[in-house]
Length: 268
Image: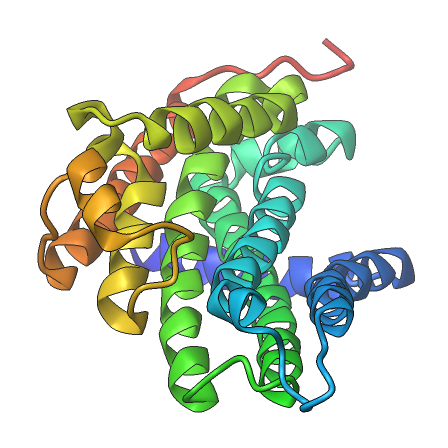
């Protein structure tokens, strides 16, 4: 266990130093600035003479902010978490990891931590920009509280989706990013929107319910219609527990797969 932790921290430090190239910094900054810019464009179109956003736009400003930052969060996780094994095979460093004691698990956990840290940092910067834009147009009643609540929600999202995408990266290697995108669209998108019990097994449902419990009502339809479709509200701690349980399952299964599977290198 100590070797795993030390190896994961060493991998995290190495990957952070190696991966932050000029190209990746530009991509991260561009993604972080996209939600505030889009929110500003929408709010400016609806800007009135009185200096405030029109009532119908202000009502859904929080939803737009949550949706746009969520896109950035999952995109960063797709870019950083899914190629955890494929990048080592392409870089011809996989054979070195195999002969090290606990090298595979250290690589898996280290890259998971890097993906979570980068995605959370980018999402937080983007969220701060969105809160500033929304506050400038008068679309938020308590911007600091909104920032704190959404920071917690996106932190949970980075943790659980990072584990799921890291698991996908150990199974599908070359097509991991495509499979991850399909998982987001099919499971976390379509399946989570179905008015059935199966939607409660998706992480987007638990994250959405956590946001509603902490932040308040921000979805673009009435609470009555929402509760008819998805059932009564559960306590926030229950949703957080489900998210953490899925994170543990994803990491454990990923470690089992990466240690038991034989990956074919280009030389072989």
